[in-house]
Length: 339
Image (cartoon, rainbow, N blue to C red; front, side, top):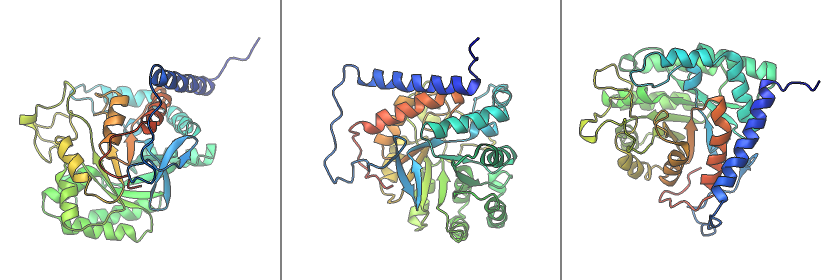
């Protein structure tokens, strides 16, 4: 009797089938993409890892699509469906997470980003020890307090904790940076960034509000990269434009409906065009509301250098194939590639 395939073999086979399917769909009936002008700053740099284009954060080679970690940490962003966080956590067993990371590496993704809390840190140690995993880790600086209660001493203390976990890069989580800017604490944020840079790792800042990168650029803060949410706002559950509130994402107020993460995508595009270092776009699918092909094209065409995307195991292969397809197109970018 032939051996039954195990789950990992099944996932790998399904992944290859998905890759082939997306490539076939993307090329049928279409002309080959036109190459951008040679030596143009708008042309995608040619370097890749297992066929997936890469850029650099400092000296770190990072695939232009890499893995987020809300699915591991249990943040479903499920609007008012309160059971979804538990459902996701029940699905995301330790073994499934490890299998997902391994699948990502096999398909070319070489980096993941996560908070430095119990589950991701514990599983990263297991992944490296038990499976020889090489995936790079960008860690948040993220004290476990409400963001409007966090000050510079909290960031300093948490930086020490995170460095003990041996990440490959660091950044201050977006809601925290937003809260510092909203309270007028830009100098404290800048001091925290300079302390992070003493680690000699690539160091970045995050944001949901476009006012955060604007304030950081005005104050001449010099992160190695910026993580800024970027998604279209034409999905049906998006907050109507006249009701959107700055600095409202991830707050505890009654007007935060957990349904929009970039309230001014046009302003984000214009503001980030002035940022001369790498831009990592995240929440590009608005936590599952926007199909990946539409989301990836919107982000890369709008100027992002990288996309950080949360993915379940059954989404990885298709998302990798879509990223390759979109990055092979002649994108109408106005912002040069900065990585």
